[in-house]
Amino acid sequence: MSRNRERAIETVDKALAQGETMPPADMLFSYRGVLYPATLSSPETLEALKSFEARSDDVILAGYPKTGTNWLDQMLRELESADARYTEEEMKERMDAEKKLELSVRLEFGDPGMYERMKRLPSRRIIVTHLPPHLLPPSFFQSKAKILVLVRNPKDTAVSYYHFYNKMPLLPSFSSWDEYFAAFMNGKLTWGSYFDHTVEWNKHSDHENIMLISYEELQEDQVLGMKKIAAFFGFSLSEEDFSRIAKKTSFQAMKEKSHETHGKFGDILFRKGVVGSWRELFSKAQNEEMDRKFEECLGGTKLAAMMKYDVYCKA
Ligand code: A3P
Image (cartoon, rainbow, N blue to C red; front, side, top):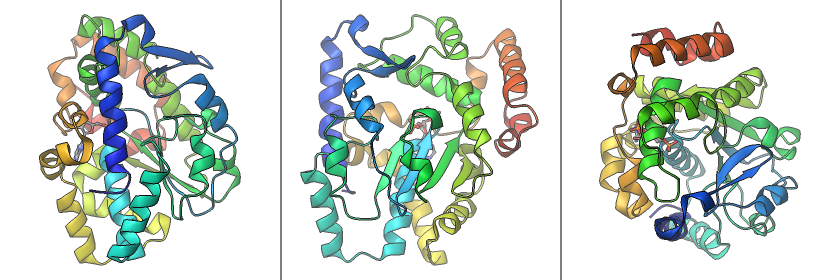
């Protein structure tokens, strides 16, 4: 089992069980105007996060929920360990350290004391977050830490998040797709507005320590995508490593192992894993509304070109 996985499964399984009996009104809390799941985080944790100290060799992954963060998280871990060439013993030591420190799978999950414990993690730390730039600790940008930002087209992200919201016991369900669609467009979901996130990250896209990659690009040619990521982080891997990792992190392979890697959460997470499933739910009016909003927020940007909005999102 990969680093920190056992602990992650325990935490998420516990949160899922708590969610089963929780009244919907208690499931979320708001911090600086954004909603979060109460079973996984707290205002105290988010307050403590401000003083988190990034290291220059931290490997950071940021992405709005449902953009494929679990997929890229797994890829990054594989790329980092292939580059580091850890021995079995070193790997075990790293896993034990993470387990002992009781860390969480996302930077913003867990207890406020977690950030102190994270100081004891050996380098290179792999840090994953759904937070947008303005809610991240200032040290992320002051250090030389590199941040890989994952984006996915808004229509597939919206559909993926809809199914997730309705299947996750720790999030309040929506009674219909139409009700959910309005919430997505108005940013009334956990981690806030997709558009705010994406617009904010786009502003950082030319920063030397930030690299943007899209879910669509990784679907088109995963090996090429991983080569770009490896070059960005300075990882050195062989052709064989890249093809081994691509096989190991294919949707089918990850879904088959999901009980081992993600526990019960795996059944919710690995849904379809394709580009274009938005066509099953969007009405003509919703499609047009999304096209207008995307154009208004991101039309003509590098990011829009990268996710190939015109190819994957036009009816
Ligand atoms: P769908 O709901 O469209 O299937 P996140 O990890 O950020 O929560 O994103 C979840 C989305 O990534 C889900 O999309 C999930 O199926 C997809 N995903 C997970 N693993 C994947 C993989 N190995 N290849 C492609 N897509 C994957």
